[in-house]
Image (cartoon, rainbow, N blue to C red; front, side, top):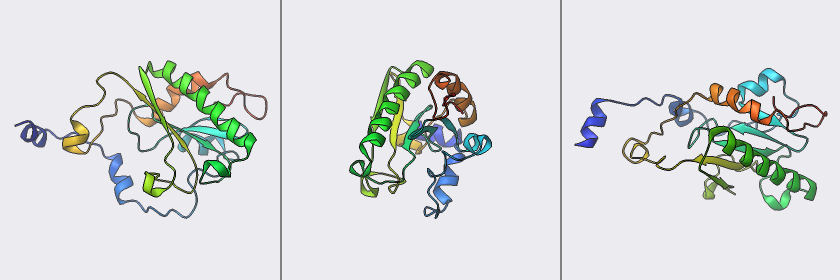
Length: 180
């Protein structure tokens, strides 16, 4: 009965088709070049903050509203490939990002994780990145199970704009703000 009601009243998630049909081997790494990218390029890539060794961006195909990625600038696939300073900087930024995201979206909890390798679920296995997904009581429902759809209450552009204020005081490599 519930399935028949869903079929008669579809919930549209059109951004998923871009991912489903899009090429999976894009040639260039989607994470590389952020450090030297223009402000407009960073905005179009949903970058929230840039520090000397890493950056924060919205996941273009999120599991929940506010799903962030913390990414080192250096192109490596595994934790052991990071230099000690890059490793430390990445996880300091993960800690800062978790604190700021939780405050920004009033998350009741967070999932923080790394998928190392394609078989572990990494969509971009060649460039290490950390997922931070905000969670709330009751935020999972029947939609992913019955309709292979996630309900996002806010567009990525609006989420990025909202988060910028929470990253304004994070220092960047030039002594200014890491928020971009």
